[in-house]
Image (tube, rainbow, N blue to C red):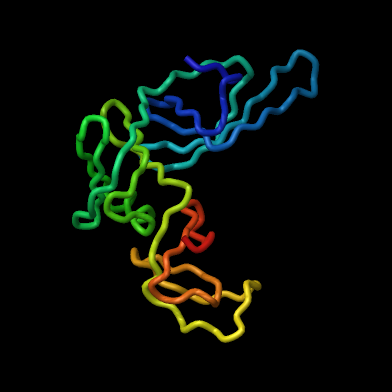
Length: 187
């Protein structure tokens, strides 16, 4: 059991029989005497992907989810679905196409990830904060290009389209932020 004082970003709790990850927590102090402190949370249901807001009173208790994180590896795409392997017991899991599609632009075969398992079933995949991908297509290098705010479009080996500095060429490796899909640096 978790108390509202244990709530923090990234904590997995069980609400309505489903694992939910807390994405934001704020506390609101009472204005009247005798009122309880309110703990406002925003959480995402790991099975459906829906985001909810819920307010708890200070001291409320919630169940701990039967949720485990395991080191995993992306193996391959199979008809739009992603196949992952648990590196601890070599069990394989499939992720449905609608959940896999946003992740697929950052995954190459063999990419290490963190698998979220709920009651032995994979419900979540955490990507590394950045990945290294190769630029497959971009405009030619611009003469006298500097590292100013100028950018150009580039297509990476996974099909991801990003903005890159004008001095990059096709064939170069770049680091990409997996949270928002932006260019970080040359690899």
